[in-house]
Length: 160
Ligand SMILES: [Zn+2]
Image (tube, rainbow, N blue to C red):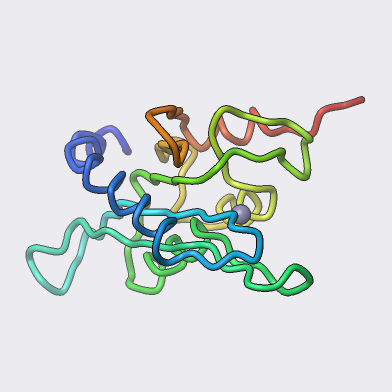
């Protein structure tokens, strides 16, 4: 299913990378300067306008207060795609500083979706097991490519 749309996603990835970085650098709000940006590429089989089969949605994280609520960049972007009627999230680009995963205790070379986001995204029909995730370190060129299924498998809580 997804294979059909992946070439279009990879073609626009350089732009998505720029936008994910821009989201982290200029839009995110964090009391501890933990800034994350997301730009995702979504498909709609019945768009209102003929040019809108594919569309980009963006998000940034918001946690302005240490003891306040938190909104994650990828959850914001995925919800925006859902609200606009986009039925398939083809690929997701996330830019941020890696940090230890709260649920699993694992530290990856790049920032992967947190436990809450993995739960939300798993529940969304727009996100498929083969939805592609490109995760980028905010500094330099370190990046990782995973399918959503691989992210779910990687972040299984470790049994200690
Ligand atoms: Zn999250």
